Image (cartoon, rainbow, N blue to C red; front, side, top):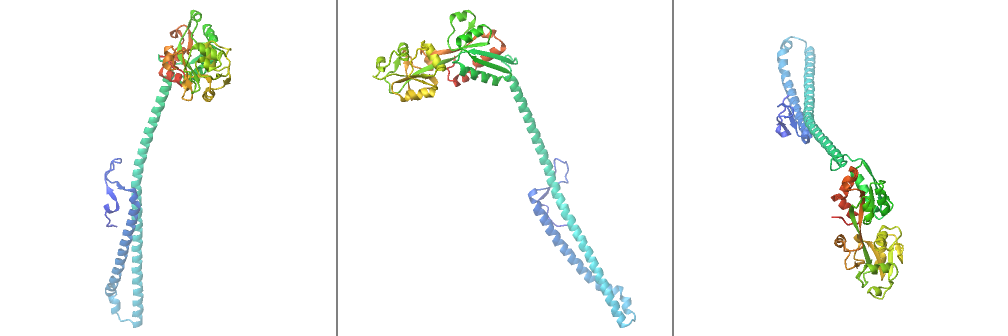
Length: 418
C-alpha cells in the first residue's frame, strides 16, 4: 500500500550512518516519534475510508450489469411469474451477500495493512532510536573507559608520589624509627615535628621523650637516643665529648605590662630584681608610684622554665599570680594596673605593652641579631656531625631545614634559623 506522506514532513531523513557503513538507515529525531505515529495513523484512516467507499460503489454499479448479462437466459425463459419473482429475489440476496463478503475482505485487508504499516513505522522509529542508543552506549562506554583510564593513571601517580614520599633525597627508602630526648620546653615543637615527619614518611616512627635539656645531651652522647633536644646552647664540656650543636629554631619571650604603665625599658638586672621581689614599686624602676604585680606561668610551663633559666632565677621568683595559659597571662596583665608578665613573642598584641630590655625591643630581627636577651636557641644535638648520622636522622634534619620545616617552626610560635 502506498501512503502519500512526505518524509521531510514527518521528520525522517535518509543519510549515511557512519557507524554501520550503510545507506539504508533511517534516522528519526526521538522527539518526533509520537507525531510521526499519529500522522501515519491519520493517513491510514483517511486512505482506508476512501478505499472502502470506492469498493462499495464499484460493487453496487457492477451488480445490475451482471444481472443483465449472466442471467439474461433465465429471464427470457417462460416460467411462472411467482417462480421468476422468487428466483430474482434469491439472486439479489446472493449478489448482496457476495458484495458484503468482498467488502468485508477488503476491510480486513485494509485493517491488516494499516496495522502492518503502524507496526513497521514503530519498528523503524525504535530501530533508529536503538541505533542512537547503541551509539550513545558506545559513547558512554568510551567515556567510562577514558574515566577508568584516568582513574588508573591518577592512582598510579598517587602510588608513585607515595612511593617517592617514602624515599629521602638520595632515593633511599626510609623505614625504621628515630628517638628524640631532652628539653621539656621543646615538647610542642618536638611533637609537631614527629607527627609531620611520620605523615610524610609512613614507614618511619619518631618517638619523643622529655627528660630535660641536660639529660637529653647525656643520652645522645651515651648512644641511648638519636637526637638530644636542648633549649639552651651546649656547654663547652658537652661539645668536648662529641656533642654537636644543631640549632633548629629560636624561641623569643616578651616581657609585657598594662598599656598605661609609664616604663618602656628595663635592664636585665632590674627585671631580675622585680621577679625576685627586690623591687616592689614601679617608682623604683623610673615609673609611677604604683605597686608591682608579678604575673607568671604555672610550675612546669616551658615559657616559665626558659624565662627563669635565662635570668638565672629558678626557684627564687616571687609571683603574685601563677596562671596556666598564655591567654590568661595576657588578660590579667592587660586588666591589672602595675602588672608585669611574660609571654611568647608571637602572641603580643595591642592589649598589652611589650618592654624593651637593655635598649633592644622584642622583635624577630633583634632576637636573630642576639641583641634581645630573652631568646634562646632550640638545639637538636647529635653525637658527631649530621652527615655522620643514619639516613633516617639525616632525612629528619633535611626536613627541619626545608621550606616545610620552616613553616612548621613558625606554626608553633618559634623563629626560623637563616
